[in-house]
Length: 449
Image (cartoon, rainbow, N blue to C red; front, side, top):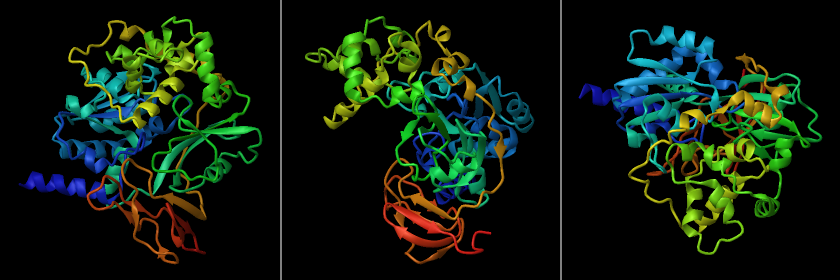
């Protein structure tokens, strides 16, 4: 009974603090850790080029991350914890080895390949278990957590809610940096801290260069899941490719795809035995009639971008094609097929991992592959726009009113009754100025000191 109470208390504290997955879609963490699992895997791969958040947090906050990991192991009843990270993160490995001594936790060393941080790959590399196509790690008795998520869990157990996020600002900026900012800080404000004030002729990617999205409105706020801002010229090949209209992408596929199948042979999900063959999907761009089963393959695509940024010798975009087909199938209510019962990893999987150094060179990012030192300095932010939906599930409901004074850490929005969601807290002290699908807080003199 005592263990049950402890588990329920842990989960409730995580829920109260508004902890969500900090490195992905923002799935509410209190739901994830309420499951029973044999293993808790820490996804410390940080495989997206240029991002530097997790590798530095694992070093300087190793003790707090391990405390969060131990808490999740207690909550899930897991018998082992596994920290999966790359061999090149030498400082982090040294720090973590000290913290896990005497605990049922091991370090699993990953190679420097992309996309090592894909949940399915991380689990396979760490445990040898194959997550079924379309499934989640829990299907093979694993719970996977991001590094910053575990740090937020450790804070939650001390009564500290999620009010800030760590992110790397890099690319064409004077001072690449990794820092902690209040949730709701505008992208423009964040870029100023890295010394970038002139954005004429520039585009900004939120996230990594492979899976991140180009930001159209630089006044938009950062959220609990923002891990990187990358500034590049509009003439950079990566930006030019990302901004091509889909009509152009489809026409290029119709004209230029030579069915070489490199996109399939290097597809990380295909190599894990998933029913996806991108070269066959590209073939359907010309002839869709009678190709329903082939089109449904796109539902197994993780949109990692290996096919378009590394594999295709013709410079085509199978990822973009898959993404559009997935959208169309979703509108028709077509869901993924049941995973194959005989799913097995391809024998060539171990030989077809994409080296990050080569990927960086292929992306034209070699000159930007530099350190972005972590700063714990508190940067003054006078106004934040905190989105009510910055996590998987339903938008949170505001429980404050316009004109109300709040302090940093105050609860300002809650999960709707019986819905999937997460609590939201004030990230600065100030006055509530506006409530729409976001809550805008402006600081008052001396209130956020």
